Amino acid sequence: MRILGINAVFHDPAAALVVDGEIVAAAEEERFSRRKHGKRPVPFSAWEMPEQAAAWCLEFAGIRPDQVDAVGYSYDPDLVDHSLGGLDDGSERTRTDYARRAPGFLKACLPGLDPSSVRFVRHHVAHGASAALAAPFDDPAVLVADGRGESTSYLAGEYRDGKFVELASQRLPHSLGLLYEELTEHLGFARSSDEYKVMALASYGEPRFLSEFERLVPTDGDGGFRTEPVDWTSFAPPATGSDFSREHADLAASVQRRLEDVLLELAAWLHRRTGNRKLAMAGGIALNCVANTRLHAEGPFEQIWVQPAAGDAGTALGAALQLATEWGEPVQAMPGADLGREWTDGELETVLRRAKLAYSRPDDLAGTVAAALADDQIVAWFQGRAEFGPRALGHRSLLAHPGHAGNLERLNDVKGREHFRPVAPMVLADRAGEIFQRGPLPSPYMLFVHDVAPAWRDRLPAVTHVDGTARVQTVEAGENPLLARMLTGFEARTGLPAVVNTSLNTAGRPMVDSPRDALECFGSAPIDLLAIGPFVIRR
Image (cartoon, rainbow, N blue to C red; front, side, top):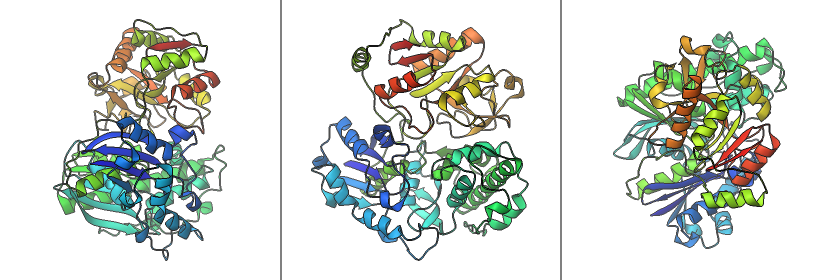
């Protein structure tokens, strides 16, 4: 069956295509529209469909809209309870109405599509399916937590013979995700967007308000929790998003620690109920790599797999996978996060010639980039299919030398980011164990933090965060030989087996996706070299 998955109701609109149980393509609308997160997360934007992403998924597979067997839409408007708190005041019915009209909106976006083929999939079930059904193991326990779905904010259960069995959920207004969003807004950041900045800021503080948040966010011992209203100003005054005091950092650290503790309690309960040794996670909370590492290091599960597109974009994939299993199709594990667009060498060269840029085609691209990095140049790396999800994983990346402490501030200046934000290391999988500890290895999707071994902290200062951790991406030589050769070449020149890897974009802009995006980013930011396919452009 040819099943198209759609996420559109909140934020990060996306599309995914599953054909005969195989994940063929997945992409976020922001990569096409160049609008960060695709749209605003407000009720009146729920009519906006990921029309460009959906059209590309079908075009990539050579499928016309009238050949689609089913469409999974990752939200069920019939499950919304308008009497609950935690909903958008006064306009939630608009969101629900637009969600019900999704079949008509999709028909307008994809002429020929049969609107009767659209099936509504419960939001958190779509999240869970995106993790459990795409995981590299069968029938895991499942934990989903985010801001909200239709009427809940959390779902726990397990898959048995490919079918989901629900064991617990949490009704609104109680929500770990909304709690974190409120803190994000109080600190002057954009909610449903900048929560990762709060996680980074938390490393600079101490959880001295933890006892208060233990009272405000209690668990019930039966797989649930509560989140009481918080008077944020009683802990720290509102911040501007750039000027922080010790109180702000301590507040972030306190909420971060309470989030971790609650997740550990929920995971322990789920393990007791299921006896399962494997856990799959999704939902926006699953992008909190600090919490993920505590679950790995201190929790009861032997294996934890987090969906690379764990946020709402991933529900497009989950909705498609869920429908596939409901119709009896065996689904295959996610082959990797590189599920987006790519260009041939000929197409790339045509773009470069049209732009009238001087470029070269070196015999050894990996060696050329390794030499530039060893010379402390910043390199934009554009190779293969674009990533699905928020992490740059060696396809649309910005690379730098990790051995110079000043490169952290330098990269944050290049990207226009806050200076407290860390950057991450990319390392060959067979070298990671001697440098990085505590988090799971291999770690191909950059969704856990690892302790940097003391002997390496002074050698890798650009990627060692203030708390001694790093968010690691491991690279398997068999899966990405070009990237592996570059890492090997860099180590031969510097003695360091890792490089800095951060997303190829600037602040407020989506990650680079197309060759045009790459050229615009290279032209507007102080990047020294662009490696685009087999070609090199120098500043």
